[in-house]
Amino acid sequence: MIEYKSIGTPTRVLDGRDKITGQIQYAPDIKIPGMLHGRLVTSPHAHATISSIDASAALTVPGVVQVITAQELPDIPAKSRNRLFLARGRVIFAGQPVALVLAESAAAAEDGAEQVWVEYDALTAVTTISEALAEGAPLVWPGGKPGASGEAGAHGADISEEEEDEDAVKGPNIANGFVMKRGDIAAGFAEADVIIERTFSTSMVHQSYLEPMTHTAVPDAYGNGITVYASTQAPSMLVNKWPKCWVCRKRPCASSPPIPVVHLAANSSSMNPLWPSSPKQLAAP
Amino acid sequence: MTLSLTRSEEMLATNPAPAAELHVKLGAKQDGTFVALQGDIKVDTGCFPSYHGIAAWLLGSFYQPPHMESRYTEVFTHKVSPAAYRAPGAP
Image 1 (cartoon, rainbow over the protein chains, first blue to last red):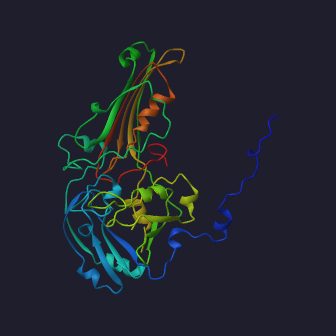
Image 2: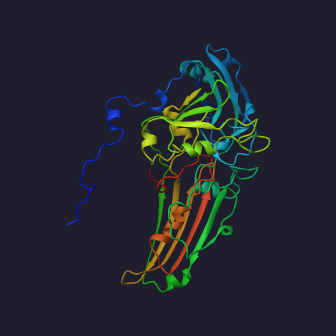
Image 3: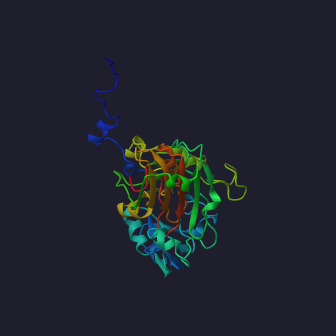
């Protein structure tokens, strides 16, 4: 009989004791003296053009320090979600961040965000696959599509025998696609005794995290770098996504932001590799 | 500075698992042998590409019928973009 070392043996959760005794520090628990608090202004529309953003009232709220919109950020191609932190000129999903209010307290930031007045011209949105593929449907990217992120590939699929044709699936509102073939599909069904055909649909699913997505950035007082405390499963991704120099496209250079040192907040994300939205640096300041 | 999303912002603005429509056609012999497998997989990728083509790859990976065709289409919509979850529709 095989004797196992691990199977059947109780295993202590590495961070269990700290969690149940309240000692663990989640990302929102991190407090740095003098730090500013951010609050997002988000779009109520799934598709709209932004005609104006008026932050003057927000800037009179006690404690509000600054309101940042896309106008204050470099205009770089929105190749991926990480490159479109704030909406520029139009919004393309409900909840998209449009402005960021910085204040001396979380409450002041929230009050300030309520005083940022954004005027939208709502446009027709496509919110299902069939709507998006219909003839004449509004385009999500009328000025050119962003590229594929190519995140798959590490999942070990055995596809070596198939031929993949990426040009076979193209069209308006199609991000990417392909057709893979092996053998002769018509001949295969011709020799089948039984044919079963089904259509399945799945809906968008979201997890409810133990802690909210939080990033805290602390610049070095002498300009020698920046430390980011992040609720992420992928600190290396945060470093890799850090902005390059807007001029020479290199990193680092004299004018690019310093590459951050990333500290993981000791939380559910860092201890659990299966929190899929957590590697995206959507909240990185 | 710090930015900590509210629960509402988490649900609105961070990446969910994608919605998908999957049409599958399977041909088999009387003895249960699979001889043909055809899949048409459409994924709602929201406003950014997410590349969930792995769904189409795996369709032809777990089962190895001699005749197979797997089509993958990733469709833009005016919704938040999804992320890499274990499978369409499952966290």
